[in-house]
Image 1 (cartoon, rainbow, N blue to C red):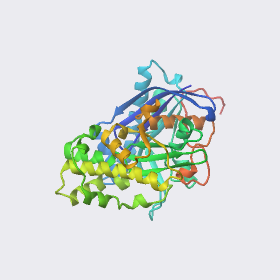
Image 2 (image 1 turned 135 degrees about the vertical axis):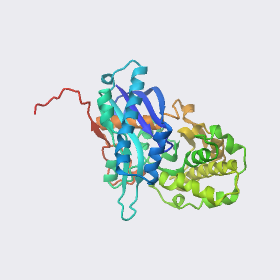
Image 3 (image 1 turned 180 degrees about the vertical axis):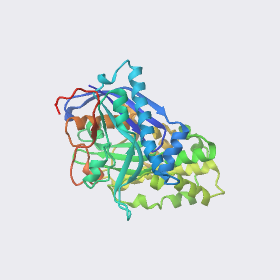
Image 4 (image 1 turned 90 degrees about the horizontal axis):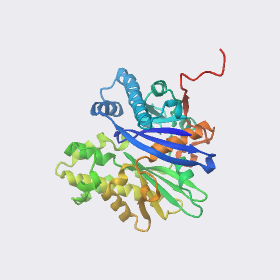
Length: 381
């Protein structure tokens, strides 16, 4: 069957859409990536998302509107993919829509309870494209007392597990997260910042969305004082399962660092942030792995940052660090593919959370269905 996966991450680049062919039982899954694209967000959309994430000058009208505005953008990504391949919604079995995370609160912070909020109204996707949409994958895991993240480990187990080997799958989006897979165990947790701090600094200093290939970072030494300050961040010492987001490492955090270090040059800050990101990844794997992996397979936008990849390898000299392309998969499409697999698990009534990764009390089926509103009903009311 054909399926489309939709994902918008903490980097706020836009809507990632992947078209896949998927079939077979879950333990013998067959998946082929047919196409991948990103529909970029306009700056106004990014600004409105950031306003909600930062919690500054927001109101219920903005939050209400943003849910539908994102729904139209996610729907447009589906339509663009369908049109590109001469398909109709009826040719696709389902769309798996992660949405855009506006806030993730995995631990209680009095008076607030653990919770998560993804937006991008699926009814719009279902109506405009006449297709079943599966979404809201995180909330059932949180109902089961998990953190609702990370969710990618389920797909990684199915696609990458190899008998007798310990393999680490590292995703570097806005946040970096790792899944470590052995014969008898699966671990997964957020390591800390991925591209997030680097991207915020690039926007602040240069008005650019990211450090292409790590050129700025490679041009400057790090500042040891700032680096030693960063490695004391309390998130690094938290024991998994754990997850994080913009709440810890986003714009407010970066701007405060820049304010406290006015004498540092832009490239020195970017280089130090890059070093810190690499350190968080290596430190997490070395400290928290049940057994050290022999290979680290990197996906996400950070896989294209050559300087970041070089520094990760330097921190992990005894581990073979390669991108997903070396294994025949797309680094960009990794998370969107993961949600296709989660949608497929929902259809097959297969629990898809990994309690060792999220801390959930039980394995549970993830997702909610927004059906194609034009499908003829099998029931009479």
